[in-house]
Image (cartoon, rainbow, N blue to C red):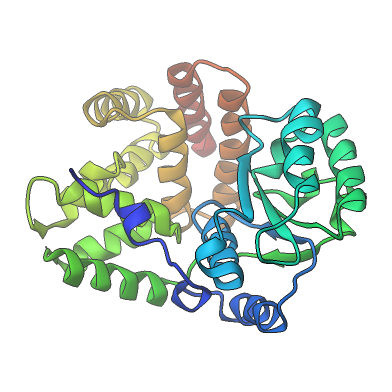
Length: 315
Protein backbone atom coordinates (compact mmCIF):
# COMPACT_ATOMS: atom_id res chain seq x y z
CA UNK A 1 0.00 0.00 0.00
CA UNK A 2 1.38 3.42 -1.02
CA UNK A 3 1.59 6.01 1.75
CA UNK A 4 -0.03 9.39 1.17
CA UNK A 5 2.86 11.76 1.76
CA UNK A 6 0.68 14.65 2.95
CA UNK A 7 -0.35 12.49 5.92
CA UNK A 8 2.95 10.67 6.30
CA UNK A 9 4.79 13.98 6.78
CA UNK A 10 2.11 15.78 8.77
CA UNK A 11 3.79 16.96 12.01
CA UNK A 12 2.77 15.28 15.26
CA UNK A 13 3.89 18.15 17.50
CA UNK A 14 4.07 21.92 17.25
CA UNK A 15 7.87 21.72 17.24
CA UNK A 16 7.75 19.82 13.93
CA UNK A 17 5.61 22.42 12.11
CA UNK A 18 7.50 24.10 9.26
CA UNK A 19 7.84 27.88 9.55
CA UNK A 20 5.53 30.33 11.37
CA UNK A 21 7.92 30.61 14.31
CA UNK A 22 6.00 33.42 16.05
CA UNK A 23 2.64 31.69 15.74
CA UNK A 24 4.01 28.34 16.87
CA UNK A 25 5.77 30.03 19.78
CA UNK A 26 2.49 31.51 21.01
CA UNK A 27 0.64 28.22 20.59
CA UNK A 28 3.40 26.44 22.49
CA UNK A 29 2.96 28.97 25.30
CA UNK A 30 -0.74 27.99 25.49
CA UNK A 31 0.29 24.34 25.76
CA UNK A 32 2.76 25.16 28.53
CA UNK A 33 -0.01 26.97 30.42
CA UNK A 34 -2.35 24.03 29.85
CA UNK A 35 -5.20 26.15 28.51
CA UNK A 36 -6.20 27.90 25.29
CA UNK A 37 -8.81 30.50 24.29
CA UNK A 38 -11.00 30.13 21.23
CA UNK A 39 -8.68 30.41 18.20
CA UNK A 40 -9.02 31.43 14.57
CA UNK A 41 -6.43 30.39 11.98
CA UNK A 42 -6.69 32.32 8.72
CA UNK A 43 -4.60 32.28 5.56
CA UNK A 44 -4.07 30.60 2.17
CA UNK A 45 -4.39 26.85 1.62
CA UNK A 46 -1.43 24.64 2.47
CA UNK A 47 0.16 26.99 5.00
CA UNK A 48 -0.26 24.78 8.07
CA UNK A 49 -3.58 25.78 9.65
CA UNK A 50 -5.03 22.26 10.00
CA UNK A 51 -1.61 20.82 10.84
CA UNK A 52 -1.13 23.34 13.65
CA UNK A 53 -4.58 22.63 15.09
CA UNK A 54 -4.00 18.87 15.20
CA UNK A 55 -0.45 19.25 16.56
CA UNK A 56 -1.80 21.57 19.28
CA UNK A 57 -4.37 18.95 20.29
CA UNK A 58 -1.74 16.20 20.38
CA UNK A 59 0.57 18.32 22.54
CA UNK A 60 -2.27 19.16 24.92
CA UNK A 61 -3.88 15.74 25.28
CA UNK A 62 -1.21 13.20 24.37
CA UNK A 63 -2.66 9.73 23.73
CA UNK A 64 -6.18 10.96 24.59
CA UNK A 65 -6.27 13.55 21.83
CA UNK A 66 -8.75 11.74 19.58
CA UNK A 67 -11.33 11.48 22.38
CA UNK A 68 -11.09 15.21 23.09
CA UNK A 69 -10.78 16.56 19.54
CA UNK A 70 -13.43 16.73 16.82
CA UNK A 71 -12.71 17.94 13.31
CA UNK A 72 -15.50 18.93 10.96
CA UNK A 73 -15.33 20.56 7.54
CA UNK A 74 -17.77 23.43 7.15
CA UNK A 75 -17.64 23.29 3.34
CA UNK A 76 -19.26 19.84 3.51
CA UNK A 77 -21.66 20.63 6.36
CA UNK A 78 -22.31 24.36 6.17
CA UNK A 79 -25.88 24.71 7.42
CA UNK A 80 -27.29 25.53 10.82
CA UNK A 81 -28.16 21.88 11.54
CA UNK A 82 -24.50 20.84 11.88
CA UNK A 83 -24.05 23.48 14.60
CA UNK A 84 -27.28 22.64 16.40
CA UNK A 85 -26.79 18.89 16.29
CA UNK A 86 -23.29 17.49 15.73
CA UNK A 87 -21.22 20.31 17.21
CA UNK A 88 -23.52 20.94 20.18
CA UNK A 89 -23.72 17.21 20.99
CA UNK A 90 -19.92 16.95 21.13
CA UNK A 91 -19.55 20.21 23.06
CA UNK A 92 -21.93 19.22 25.87
CA UNK A 93 -20.19 15.90 26.69
CA UNK A 94 -17.39 15.80 29.25
CA UNK A 95 -13.75 15.64 28.15
CA UNK A 96 -11.57 12.59 28.87
CA UNK A 97 -8.89 13.32 31.50
CA UNK A 98 -8.85 17.00 30.54
CA UNK A 99 -10.50 20.28 31.47
CA UNK A 100 -12.05 20.89 28.05
CA UNK A 101 -12.46 19.51 24.54
CA UNK A 102 -11.46 21.09 21.23
CA UNK A 103 -13.74 21.41 18.20
CA UNK A 104 -11.82 22.21 15.03
CA UNK A 105 -14.04 23.76 12.37
CA UNK A 106 -12.16 23.69 9.06
CA UNK A 107 -13.14 26.08 6.23
CA UNK A 108 -15.36 27.98 8.64
CA UNK A 109 -15.81 30.77 6.08
CA UNK A 110 -18.14 28.40 4.20
CA UNK A 111 -20.68 28.47 7.05
CA UNK A 112 -23.94 30.24 6.29
CA UNK A 113 -24.82 33.39 8.21
CA UNK A 114 -27.45 31.55 10.25
CA UNK A 115 -24.95 28.80 11.09
CA UNK A 116 -22.41 31.39 12.25
CA UNK A 117 -25.00 33.02 14.52
CA UNK A 118 -25.80 29.61 16.02
CA UNK A 119 -22.07 28.92 16.41
CA UNK A 120 -21.58 32.19 18.29
CA UNK A 121 -24.24 31.18 20.81
CA UNK A 122 -22.75 27.68 21.14
CA UNK A 123 -19.30 29.15 21.84
CA UNK A 124 -20.85 31.18 24.68
CA UNK A 125 -22.84 28.32 26.19
CA UNK A 126 -20.08 25.71 26.30
CA UNK A 127 -16.95 27.80 26.85
CA UNK A 128 -16.32 26.08 30.20
CA UNK A 129 -16.34 22.65 28.58
CA UNK A 130 -15.11 23.24 25.04
CA UNK A 131 -12.75 25.40 23.00
CA UNK A 132 -13.20 26.15 19.32
CA UNK A 133 -10.51 26.46 16.65
CA UNK A 134 -11.81 27.95 13.41
CA UNK A 135 -9.81 27.71 10.19
CA UNK A 136 -10.59 29.84 7.15
CA UNK A 137 -9.05 31.29 4.01
CA UNK A 138 -10.86 34.63 4.37
CA UNK A 139 -11.46 36.00 7.86
CA UNK A 140 -13.67 38.74 6.39
CA UNK A 141 -16.35 36.08 5.80
CA UNK A 142 -16.54 35.33 9.54
CA UNK A 143 -18.97 37.54 11.46
CA UNK A 144 -17.46 40.07 13.89
CA UNK A 145 -19.05 38.53 17.04
CA UNK A 146 -17.16 35.27 16.38
CA UNK A 147 -13.90 37.03 15.52
CA UNK A 148 -14.05 39.05 18.73
CA UNK A 149 -14.31 35.82 20.74
CA UNK A 150 -11.16 34.34 19.17
CA UNK A 151 -7.42 34.92 19.25
CA UNK A 152 -6.68 35.36 15.54
CA UNK A 153 -3.52 33.93 13.96
CA UNK A 154 -2.73 34.81 10.35
CA UNK A 155 -0.74 32.20 8.43
CA UNK A 156 1.28 33.49 5.47
CA UNK A 157 2.69 31.44 2.61
CA UNK A 158 5.91 29.63 3.42
CA UNK A 159 9.20 31.30 2.54
CA UNK A 160 11.31 29.86 -0.28
CA UNK A 161 14.10 28.85 2.09
CA UNK A 162 11.63 26.86 4.21
CA UNK A 163 10.18 25.12 1.16
CA UNK A 164 13.66 24.27 -0.19
CA UNK A 165 14.64 22.73 3.13
CA UNK A 166 11.40 20.74 3.16
CA UNK A 167 12.00 19.47 -0.41
CA UNK A 168 15.51 18.34 0.50
CA UNK A 169 14.18 16.51 3.57
CA UNK A 170 11.63 14.69 1.41
CA UNK A 171 14.31 13.79 -1.13
CA UNK A 172 16.51 12.34 1.58
CA UNK A 173 13.73 10.41 3.30
CA UNK A 174 12.17 9.05 0.10
CA UNK A 175 15.50 8.44 -1.67
CA UNK A 176 15.04 10.48 -4.83
CA UNK A 177 17.20 13.08 -6.56
CA UNK A 178 15.93 16.45 -7.71
CA UNK A 179 17.77 19.02 -9.83
CA UNK A 180 18.07 22.69 -8.87
CA UNK A 181 15.94 23.61 -11.89
CA UNK A 182 13.25 21.21 -10.66
CA UNK A 183 13.35 22.76 -7.18
CA UNK A 184 12.86 26.20 -8.73
CA UNK A 185 9.93 24.82 -10.72
CA UNK A 186 8.34 23.47 -7.52
CA UNK A 187 8.75 26.84 -5.84
CA UNK A 188 7.16 28.55 -8.83
CA UNK A 189 4.08 26.36 -9.20
CA UNK A 190 3.43 25.70 -5.50
CA UNK A 191 3.65 29.34 -4.36
CA UNK A 192 4.41 28.47 -0.74
CA UNK A 193 1.75 25.76 -0.43
CA UNK A 194 3.50 22.84 1.31
CA UNK A 195 0.61 20.47 0.67
CA UNK A 196 0.90 21.11 -3.06
CA UNK A 197 4.68 20.71 -2.87
CA UNK A 198 4.21 17.29 -1.27
CA UNK A 199 1.60 16.12 -3.77
CA UNK A 200 3.64 17.28 -6.78
CA UNK A 201 6.77 15.50 -5.58
CA UNK A 202 4.93 12.27 -4.78
CA UNK A 203 3.34 12.30 -8.24
CA UNK A 204 6.67 13.05 -9.95
CA UNK A 205 8.47 10.21 -8.15
CA UNK A 206 5.93 7.52 -9.00
CA UNK A 207 7.79 6.54 -12.20
CA UNK A 208 11.37 7.74 -11.67
CA UNK A 209 13.72 8.68 -8.86
CA UNK A 210 15.63 11.47 -10.61
CA UNK A 211 13.29 14.44 -10.93
CA UNK A 212 13.77 17.10 -13.61
CA UNK A 213 12.08 20.40 -14.31
CA UNK A 214 9.98 18.71 -17.01
CA UNK A 215 8.70 16.16 -14.49
CA UNK A 216 7.56 18.91 -12.10
CA UNK A 217 5.56 20.83 -14.69
CA UNK A 218 4.04 17.57 -15.90
CA UNK A 219 3.08 16.44 -12.38
CA UNK A 220 1.67 19.88 -11.54
CA UNK A 221 -0.25 20.13 -14.83
CA UNK A 222 1.22 23.60 -15.20
CA UNK A 223 2.63 25.71 -18.01
CA UNK A 224 6.35 26.41 -18.17
CA UNK A 225 7.39 30.07 -17.95
CA UNK A 226 8.77 30.04 -21.50
CA UNK A 227 5.54 28.51 -22.83
CA UNK A 228 3.23 31.12 -21.32
CA UNK A 229 5.69 33.92 -22.22
CA UNK A 230 5.68 32.83 -25.86
CA UNK A 231 1.89 32.87 -25.94
CA UNK A 232 1.74 36.30 -24.27
CA UNK A 233 4.37 37.78 -26.60
CA UNK A 234 2.41 36.61 -29.65
CA UNK A 235 -0.77 38.10 -28.24
CA UNK A 236 0.97 41.40 -27.42
CA UNK A 237 2.39 41.51 -30.96
CA UNK A 238 -1.19 41.33 -32.25
CA UNK A 239 -0.90 37.74 -33.49
CA UNK A 240 -4.07 36.66 -31.72
CA UNK A 241 -4.88 33.55 -33.79
CA UNK A 242 -1.41 31.99 -33.34
CA UNK A 243 -1.48 32.76 -29.62
CA UNK A 244 -4.96 31.26 -29.32
CA UNK A 245 -4.05 28.08 -31.24
CA UNK A 246 -0.81 27.56 -29.29
CA UNK A 247 -2.52 28.04 -25.91
CA UNK A 248 -5.39 25.77 -26.91
CA UNK A 249 -2.93 22.99 -27.86
CA UNK A 250 -1.12 23.40 -24.53
CA UNK A 251 -4.36 23.27 -22.56
CA UNK A 252 -5.44 20.07 -24.32
CA UNK A 253 -1.98 18.46 -24.04
CA UNK A 254 -1.61 19.26 -20.30
CA UNK A 255 -5.25 18.90 -19.33
CA UNK A 256 -5.40 22.50 -18.08
CA UNK A 257 -8.48 24.53 -17.27
CA UNK A 258 -8.99 28.29 -17.32
CA UNK A 259 -7.92 28.80 -13.71
CA UNK A 260 -4.58 27.06 -14.41
CA UNK A 261 -3.92 29.42 -17.33
CA UNK A 262 -4.82 32.50 -15.30
CA UNK A 263 -2.47 31.39 -12.51
CA UNK A 264 0.33 30.81 -15.03
CA UNK A 265 -0.14 34.26 -16.61
CA UNK A 266 -0.22 35.89 -13.18
CA UNK A 267 3.13 34.29 -12.28
CA UNK A 268 4.81 35.70 -15.40
CA UNK A 269 3.10 39.02 -16.07
CA UNK A 270 5.45 41.14 -13.94
CA UNK A 271 8.45 39.91 -15.95
CA UNK A 272 6.98 40.89 -19.32
CA UNK A 273 8.86 43.51 -21.34
CA UNK A 274 5.98 45.98 -21.40
CA UNK A 275 5.09 49.17 -19.55
CA UNK A 276 3.82 49.18 -15.99
CA UNK A 277 0.50 50.45 -17.32
CA UNK A 278 0.27 47.43 -19.62
CA UNK A 279 1.01 45.05 -16.73
CA UNK A 280 -1.66 46.79 -14.66
CA UNK A 281 -4.25 46.28 -17.39
CA UNK A 282 -3.37 42.59 -17.76
CA UNK A 283 -3.67 42.01 -14.00
CA UNK A 284 -6.99 43.86 -13.96
CA UNK A 285 -8.25 41.60 -16.75
CA UNK A 286 -6.99 38.48 -14.95
CA UNK A 287 -9.20 39.35 -11.98
CA UNK A 288 -12.20 39.97 -14.20
CA UNK A 289 -11.90 36.72 -16.14
CA UNK A 290 -11.12 34.65 -13.05
CA UNK A 291 -14.38 35.97 -11.59
CA UNK A 292 -16.28 35.06 -14.78
CA UNK A 293 -14.95 31.49 -14.69
CA UNK A 294 -15.75 31.17 -10.98
CA UNK A 295 -19.30 32.33 -11.71
CA UNK A 296 -19.78 29.58 -14.30
CA UNK A 297 -18.49 31.08 -17.55
CA UNK A 298 -17.21 28.62 -20.17
CA UNK A 299 -13.50 28.28 -19.52
CA UNK A 300 -12.32 28.12 -23.15
CA UNK A 301 -14.38 31.15 -24.20
CA UNK A 302 -13.22 33.22 -21.24
CA UNK A 303 -9.54 32.41 -21.85
CA UNK A 304 -9.89 33.35 -25.52
CA UNK A 305 -11.57 36.60 -24.49
CA UNK A 306 -8.70 37.26 -22.07
CA UNK A 307 -6.15 36.73 -24.85
CA UNK A 308 -8.14 39.09 -27.06
CA UNK A 309 -7.97 41.76 -24.33
CA UNK A 310 -4.20 41.26 -24.04
CA UNK A 311 -3.77 41.41 -27.83
CA UNK A 312 -5.76 44.68 -27.89
CA UNK A 313 -3.31 46.42 -25.51
CA UNK A 314 -0.97 47.46 -28.37
CA UNK A 315 -3.83 49.09 -30.33
